[in-house]
Image (cartoon, rainbow, N blue to C red; front, side, top):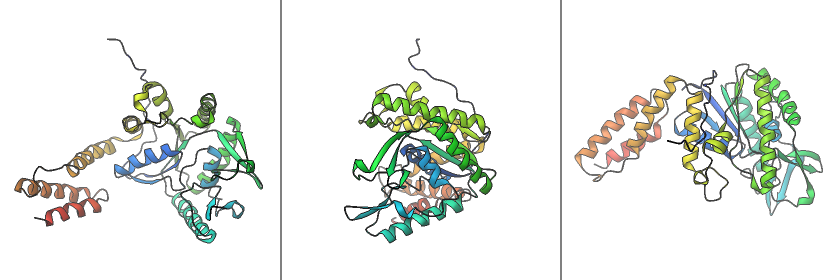
Length: 325
């Protein structure tokens, strides 16, 4: 039978992720997707703590251990709310002081976390970047301020690699064993224009190539290529035709797991998925003896699982359900 898909092999990474790994995801909204799936499978991961960051330079800037506190010049008020140009709009407050405290606490927490993180997963979204004209500096988010305050630029491969080299040196001083996984977001930035999006993605992909060539502890995961070639069909997109749908996200995550998870972790996830299915089971009769027995068995499995990962909430929910009998 004729093959109607373009599949390709992804080599298993030598930088394996285990159940004991501590991970941090940063970058575009696809970092939320990958991080969320890791978290759902009970891995130790902090998911996009700075909010969505699309361009590499903004990611590198706030990830740097030398970035100790938010730039005072980049706080801005818009419609009686305060934002910071370096951060996503999830960082918002009706007071500059409160926002400053919120942002700086997050910066401090990440700087502390970096010393114990085993895997840093960075997702690049676009090579387009905005420069604030006064003061002259690249920013992460325009926060719907007037267009005449900014200048839109396109990063080069050299810009990205040069900026990363500085960050890499700083990260290795803090955590010599840190492994970095780079990926290009499969989300299409069509607002920039379709040809412009392809240009942007090609720059990001080329930068990833050179970074993985120059640094042996950096690997690239081809989420973009999986979406563009293996899943080349609009049925794998959400109705906006920009974002991958849940089927595509799950498929890409399974490929990620095949590439990076060690055998013990794969085995654990198989066990955990069985428990998750049991948790999500909806009984025909909640008051039946058979359902009570089902819940008791589930509770036993969760208690055993609690020796390996945190399942406090799940245990509480099952105990609450049993208390209704």
